[in-house]
Length: 309
Image (tube, one colour):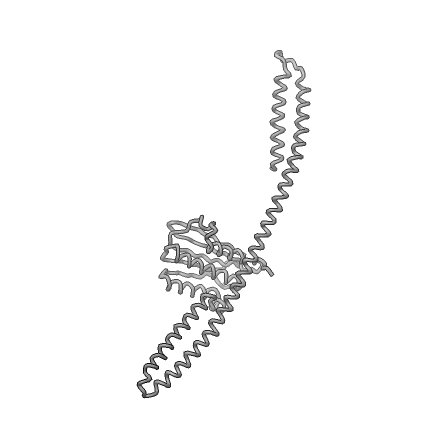
């Protein structure tokens, strides 16, 4: 019920009770003979009804103006929020495109150059090794050391390239990329990762693959930094056209209030990624059972929010 209706009805009720009650006291004599109670009561009720109608009109105009103002404010806030989400999605897409481009250039061009240098050094090493001049042994050792350094550099190039944008994600898909990331995470941290896959026989849009992979990366990072866990059990499946990623750990759990704090940039970033892909991200925490994070994203392209041109 609207506030102006509540106020008007309350006024009519209490004012009518007051008038009828007061007229009964004033209008009746001690012997019970009616003097002027009926006339006074009707006059008072007419006055109450007239003032009640006037009160309703005044309050209605006031509240209507307030409602219109609030509607405009909420509309403006909603429009600004949608523009922010679209801009955020656009920035993330551009960032991923740039990461992909840089990753390809590092992996292909720089990797090829380093491989070429290594081959040239190997040729020089073979030629020097075929000579009987022992004075060249030191130079041969230096060439071997340089070749070893190039091998280390190639490994670093692959690691940096994979950190920017895993090539396996584009070449082999989400399942292979998640498996590789889980394996590398386990090697780095010593935390056991039991990754399991359900039904995956469904084409996954590139944007959904990127969103799921980046959120998976961030969740593993949070486990390593804050969860104090020994085991992580991710599950991935596609059911009824919806991708579901569950990541459960056996750590100390997460404080629900942390999710709402502006300083939790990693959590906010994951929530924004999920929303921009048309999905949801839910956190379930227990001090006894650790934390479970559930990501769900519809694979339908129509569920994706429009991008800023």
